[in-house]
Length: 233
Ligand SMILES: [Zn+2]
Image 1 (cartoon, helix red, strand yellow):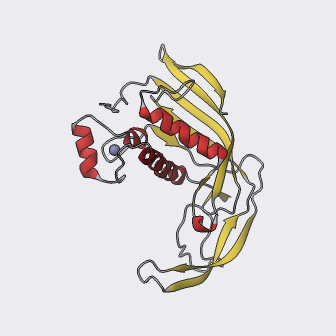
Image 2 (cartoon, protein in one colour):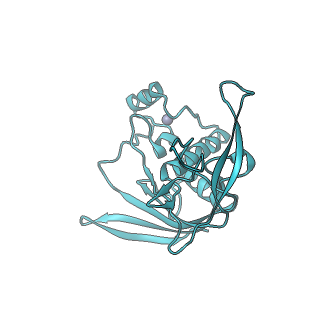
Image 3 (cartoon, helix red, strand yellow):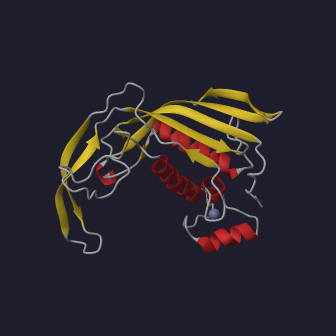
């Protein structure tokens, strides 16, 4: 029965630093923009004028992916925002591995996913495309056309994720189901890529992990010291 409420004690912190590439057009972060006078209806999310893939969006994709992998391994999966289940997990001190990684309404997250920004000096080109959408409530009602902004494929972005108290590296601690789920996500990101943002059904938003390095830190005499590090292969 894993009680993942271990935030009072930092055993190990794993930091993964890498580069991701969007292999197809990308737009993440904002829904229907309602800024008056804007010549574009739906724009790419930006921070300080630069396109950005919010860490929260990546984390959401990772969670869905982890759920899919868990189902294939016959691990029970539930809705992320189901507070009844979260309460039960807390009372029984028996959190499921998905909540043990990403948290729930009663448990903090063990992973922190940072915003991905274009790599230093990387100039980001965008392009515009007319699109239509089907109204969710009225099935056949077409909305649009509206002008959508996308980041062109091939941009290199920063990637960083911190993992608290889960022993994924150097070797996954196999009795902890969370370690293999995290490993699987990283492997899928590296080999096939994952999709984020808008227009997934048309293939947009495919990002692939180009390279990454992991570092494990352990607390020693009140200071973080590197205990092992390596390339993600
Ligand atoms: Zn759970």
